[in-house]
Amino acid sequence: MSNNFRLHTQHDNIDEWLSISNGGTTVLLTVIGLSGSIIAQSNKEKDILLWILEHDQEVRGLGNAGFDICDIPWDSENFEAEKNFLIRVIDGANQKLGWDKLDYEPNESRIYIYIDKLKDLITKFQSKDINKQSYRDWIKESSDPRFTNPIGYTKCKTHGILLYFNGCIACNDI
Image (cartoon, rainbow, N blue to C red; front, side, top):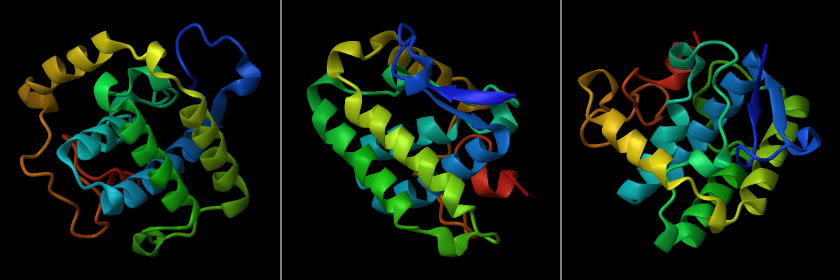
């Protein structure tokens, strides 16, 4: 099983998708979480990062952690700033930002390919393709006590990653 990341539901050119193994997905989301948890400043940036971290396979199940870029909780009015934030997060992951908190060394020859492909997808994404319903659904889902993230954007004491409703994505991988 693998996970697919693509621009939107009509993105049918599979050569442009990021298709990666379950293990690769876990490492990718973890290094994005490490970098993003250091870089995120505003509540909206933290919300975007939490949305990504919620795609932890511990919750979604193996082969179900991929997502479409259009479903990220983008704000149309602040799209460029949010897109630039994600690019900075991805660049931070590429520079090993926060990797010192891990008890393993990610396979650089593989993870850098995944990071670069994700950056390519984010860079290509355009505001006209934002799925506004997805953001509304995420907000509604967040009101369910089972899926409510910790108040105050708390971070894991071990990894420094923002905690989502199921804890720390890096701790879940142990």
